[in-house]
Each structure stands twice: as structure tokens, then as C-alpha cells.
Length: 480
Ligand code: AMP
Ligand code: MG
Image 1: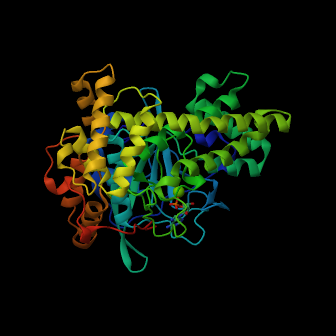
Image 2 (image 1 turned 120 degrees about the vertical axis):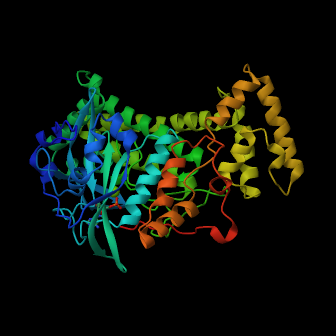
Image 3 (image 1 turned 90 degrees about the vertical axis):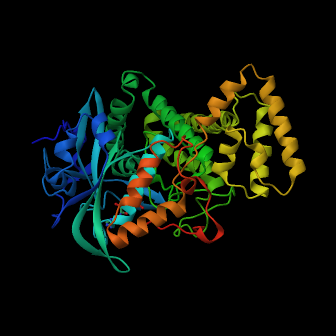
């Protein structure tokens, strides 16, 4: 039985030091608790067969279909410190081909590998449900991301601060190549670096393969994809929480949902992650950190960019210098779209910055305030400094009137970019707590359902409103 999987795993063609073939650990009593029918359909999989006992066998790793899975080797800068890493608790089942597209299908939490170090290779149920909820919401919000196909309980418990149920997440990604994979390769040898880079180009940018300056084009494309991604994050108030170079996919997809969270009231200094004690990955730092990560990535490519090292450094520097402008352009487009303006002009920057200043000073909720503007409910927004707010609204309305677009277009644009619901921390934490405590996933399922359509106003008030003071979540945990 193949369940519709059509594996053709090219990663295995790389030199053997890039991965280790590993069998998943057995699970005593696998049970699928979340299954993504839509994603299964879009991948051409057999959803009936998968969402059953047979599928639980596959998703837990008990039944290996196709070739032996593999753990990938990689390195990375974690909170600025360089470390050798690798898939310590994940295995690539295979690369699934569908309509000419290639998708990595990976099990996360499937047991120990050669890269596990002191870890047990397992994952607790809560964080795997969390990744499922948030990654799928991000997809619905139009943000490039890895996807979640299933969460499967193993039937076994693992030891953390207390015994916890373990689960496996089945993750789908356009690839699991990270900046850290290149950091690993360059340490191995220049030959390894070339091998990996040619592989990445063939996989993500086949059009570059026969170009003379293919490595330069590749670097440029990765920088481009990251600037697009981070601008999306900033526009919806998403904080990744662990922007280490091993958690930066070269595809430009958001990867590794650990202590990530969404901002409620707008504060650029927001940090949620319990492990980010210095605030390195606070909201306002994300664009700069992405640039730092890209610089680390670009450094790895230097031996390929030109035979002359000085020349190569110059090329890398030039490409990196473009990041700021690219990011700024994407950011501004997103932000003016949120205000109903289709195409930004330089003068619109001020309008956006002034609004963000009001959001910050008034500690207004990021999501619901933009939604209120989209619905024409400006007068419902409660502020202390009414005068400043009214002056801004007037300026905004004038700006809108001066654009060559109808009021209706502006309204449609806003309603389709400013979500009514997002995975707010208090909602996610409540649903996870309930699921883990009572084995009842109805609250989790409800969240998954409502985030499929984040731009609908039809959801209950409960899901739309910002948290009350006592519901505010200060910390989110990696939960590995
Ligand atoms: P992350 O912070 O999830 O990106 O993980 C960083 C590194 O730690 C990766 O190499 C993971 O594979 C590894 N890791 C995380 N949790 C575990 C675990 N429970 N067992 C083994 N390795 C782990
Ligand atoms: Mg990671």
C-alpha cells in the first residue's frame, strides 16, 4: 500500500555525509489525532486510507513505505553561537512527487538519530499540535510555510519536567534545506559545498542551472525569498522566536514552529520565547536578524561566487546590501495594503509609521485594530489621545481619496489582508492545555477550523477579541 505517496528521494543521491539513513523508533499504540484532509487532497494522497489505522502506522513510523528514511546533517548559529546539529528528532520519509512538484514528507518526533546528542528524539503532544495549528493558520494567512499533514499519538510517554504523551508531526515542505545545511557543507569541504549548492539550485531554481553566474543568482533568490517572508511576518505581528540559521529554510518557507506567537497589543519590543532571555529575536529585530542569517549564508557561498576571494566577497556584499531595500519594499506594500492602498508611494511610509506609533502608544491590539479599519469601524477604536487619532484618520482618508482606486477596492483589499482571527496565544494555550489534560481535541479542532478562513467576520466574538488582562500570555515554550 502506498497511500498515494510517490516517493522519489533525490537527497539520497548526495554524498553520504549529508545524511544518515535511520529507521523510526516503534510506537506502541499509534493513533492519528489530527489529519489534514485538504492538504492530503492537494498532494494527491489517499485520504481515506491515510486517515485510518494504516495511516497511523505510516505517520508514527511503525510502517516504513518506500526506502529507509533519513536524518539530515546540518549546522547552525543558535542565538549567535555556531553548533553542529542535524535532525535529532526528525526523519525524511521521502520526497513525494505530485503534478511535477516535489515535497519533503518528514516525521518530527520519530525517535533518536545520530544527531540526537542528549535528546530522546521524541516530541510532546502539545508542541506538535501547536505547530499544526499555527503552520496551517500561517498558510491561510498567505505566509509561505511548511505544512502539517497529521499529528499522531505514539501511545508512549516521554519524560520532560513530568511524563508527557509523545506524538509525531508529519510535516510537508518544499525542502528542508536550511542556511545551516550550507554551513555544514562548507566545513566539510568546498566540494561538498558545490555539491549541495548545485542540488539546491536544481531543486528550487532549475532555470539557473545552466547560467554562468548561477551561484550569484541563487544567493539573490534566497535573499529575495527571505525579505518577502519577513515582511509578511511583520505585517501580521508574527514572532518566530528562534530565528537560528538552522531554522531558516532557503525556500523562504517559515520553518520550525517552537515558541512562536502573535503579538496582541502592538509593542515592537515583544518577546514571548522563554529561551530568548536577551530578547535577540524580539519582534522589531526580526528583519535585521534575517539579514544577519543571510550574511552567514552568503559567507558559505563565497568559494563559489568567484575564484578571486575579494571579488567573491564583493559580490556577496552587493547582494546582501539589496536585502534592506527589498525588505522595505515588501514591508511597505504589505502595510499600505493593510490601509487599503494598492500601490505604495514613498510618501505613504509616513502614514504607516504614524499609525504604528499610535498603535504602540495606545497599546492597541494589532489584529483587531486593522480589522476595525477594514470594516469602517474607526470610531469604535478606543484611544486616549483622540485628537492625534482623528487627525491620522483624516490624513488616511485623504490619502485614500487621492489614489486612483475606488473606495470599494480599498475596502476589499483591506478585508482580504487584515485577518479577523489569528492564533492568539491565549486561545492556542487554552486549547492545548485542554487537549493534553483531557485527551479531548475539540478545542484544537475548532481552532484549526476557524483559522482556515481567517478573513471571515462570521466567527464567534470569543475568537475575535483580544485577550483580557488575566488571559495575557507572557511566555511561550519551545517544548522540545
Ligand atoms: P529546534 O530548536 O527545534 O530547531 O532544534 C534544534 C536542534 O535540537 C535540532 O538539531 C533538533 O533536531 C534537536 N532536538 C530538538 N529536540 C530534540 C529531542 N527531543 N531529541 C533530540 N534532538 C532534539
Ligand atoms: Mg530546528
